Each structure stands twice: as C-alpha cells, then as structure tokens.
Image (cartoon, rainbow, N blue to C red; front, top):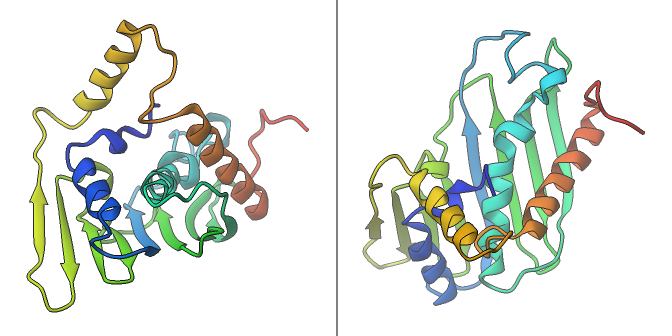
Length: 214
C-alpha cells in the first residue's frame, strides 16, 4: 500500500462522499499535474535506470492510483485504454510524461508528470453538474472544493495531525493487529493494476531497466 498514502488522507472521505452523493453528477473526466524541477544527477534514484528511475514509478502512480480510487465510487471497475507521450532524458528514463486514459464507462483522464518544471499540481474531477478540486499538492491534499454552476463554492479543509503519513501508518497497524495481509483501502488488485499501466506506458516510451528480463 506504500505510495498510495494519499488515499488515506482525511479529506478523501469528503471527496468520495461528494462523488457518491452525485453532487457533480457522473464523473466524466479527471485532470492532474504532478511536476517539480529537479537538477539532473545521473546517480540520483530519480534518474538512474538501475534504481528504477523515471517519473512514472516515482510520481505517475499518484494520479493513476487516485483516479482508480475515485472512479470506483461510481462503480467503474474496468481497465482503461492508455495513450502516452514523453521526453526521455540523458540517462534513458522518462523525465516528462503526458498520459491520456479512457475507461469503459466513458470517463477520461489527462495527467502530466515531470521532473523538469513546475505546475499547479491540482487534481480536478470533472462531472456533469460541476467539478471537485483537490488543491495542490494533491497527493498531500488538505483542502478540497466543490463547485456547481450558480452555487457558492463549498470547501472542505482537513489538516494533518502530523505530516499526512500517519494515516497510512495507522491503517497498516490496524491490518497487522487484525491479522490481515491486505488493506481494503488499498487492495492488492489496485496496486497491481496501476503497476501494469506503468509498465505498459514504459514499453510504449521504450524505457527499459537493466535488471528487467524477457
């Protein structure tokens, strides 16, 4: 469940509730950026193929994982088709990626992730009757807003007790205490599905780690 700590943040039940209550109608799309500027360092884990470098595994999993979580609220269980373009850096890993996903139920996602620049880093859920914004940085969001045409914007703010990681830690402790090897908040199937998406996009971009077989 590590790397999906965002699902356990206190503001997320509010966001899921808004979607589940139909406050924005059916979700039609999701948009997100996760970009920050890193000086190139071939030996750093972000850029080193031998250490699994690249934006997809480091930060691309966040919009992919949250999109899967939020679309499940409206019953979307299918796997999306994927389209990806990107820029490969000097060390052979992807340093900037733009991806488009299309789910069987009709929703589409547009996400950009990068090590070479900055962005608002919001995640926006677009619905028939309005939209929800997880204000950036969305992966550690403490404030979400609900906007519907002709109505005042509704805001939910849920600050962390410490730094946001405590909620994932507490969920892991609960699972261990109950003898469970899987968290219902971050099921194994979701983790595997997201990693399959990442692997498919890396293949499309021609990114291959030296330790990969086959």
